[in-house]
Every structure is written in structure tokens, then in C-alpha cells.
Image (cartoon, rainbow, N blue to C red; front, side):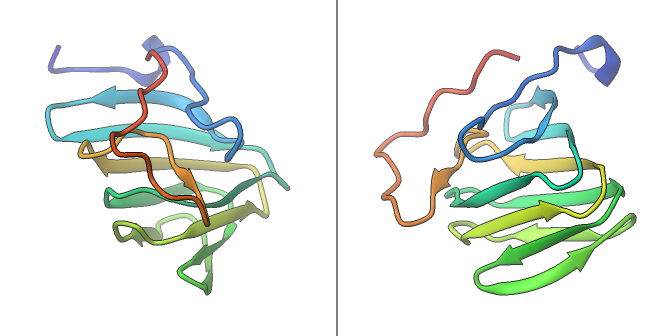
Length: 126
């Protein structure tokens, strides 16, 4: 289908052990396009993934750490997560974001300090 509406898609939580993010996901041939919400004072634990990711902030403010560098991000900011960069976030307000990731890996991250498996983990249904 070439046209999607997030409100027509199921809400999922792809990484419950790593992140409080919940939302809708679209998977194309080479990229994911995801809408995510996270309540204030919740976080994504330090993790990485072998794929590149961009996060566009629609609503709220968050503290994000990427490879040891801490940043504050808010509406209109775009965060670039390079492949294999350890990153984590703390929602300072209720958050709403758009994620764009390449599909060379799944939507699931690998906890910081753990080796990535030989193959990407399966995505949860969406």
C-alpha cells in the first residue's frame, strides 16, 4: 500500500526491555518509518544497532546521549544516530517523535556492552 495513516496501524513496543517508546511502524524495502510516543520521565536505556537512524522531534523535550555526548532535543530537532553508536534518552516532557531507520537491522536494539547477534532479531508484528 503506498499511503498509510498512523491511526490505522497497530501500536507496538518493539523494545520493552530497553525503551518505553510505543507507536506505529511502516517497513519499506530499505527503510522503516515509525511514529513513537514516550511519557515524561521514561527512558531508552543505553543500546546500539548496526543500522543508521534519524529521530525527528515533533513534541516534547528529551536528553539524549550519543556515544558519550549529551544533548537536549526538542520540537523541530533532528537527531542522527550513526551505526553502532551507543545512545540513550530521557523524556523531560511527554515525547512524540518520528524515527527513520534503514532496514539492514531490525527495529530492536542491542543493550550497550553486549555483542550483537550474528543475525538481526525478528521484529515484533506490526
